[in-house]
Length: 162
Image 1: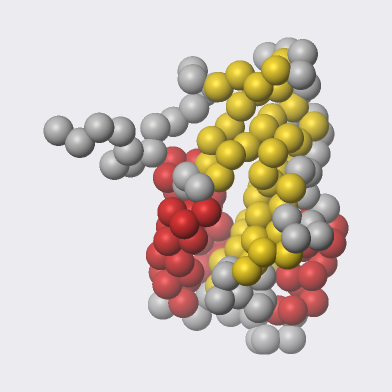
Image 2: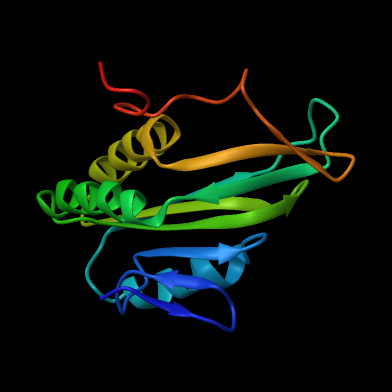
């Protein structure tokens, strides 16, 4: 069941917070420690985490993100089903709005009984996230939000139908 927590603008897809959206930079330690605490006793031999950090490049002061939650949830549910087929789970947190330099905007995790499955799934998940997730990124330059046209990617099946 999806719900919003007004106090922190956290979108939680289910009670275990497999997918969450947070306003601003992510509190990586709280998120990853929470996931570890929830899954460490569930007989997973591998808990592999990826943390994306906003780099200081191109003269930006940070990044800003817009998200279309219904499509994100559908995309994420497809990945969760792929993981379940391999006795694994995928967890993800992402920022909404502005994230300053050297802070995190994206954290993903795969919990699996087997290391090789977790390592393969985290790689495939992050690559598909970059190509397919309905999250739009803007550079913040002098407090202005500028669409990253040259570094952005069009989503599959987006745009005008012919």
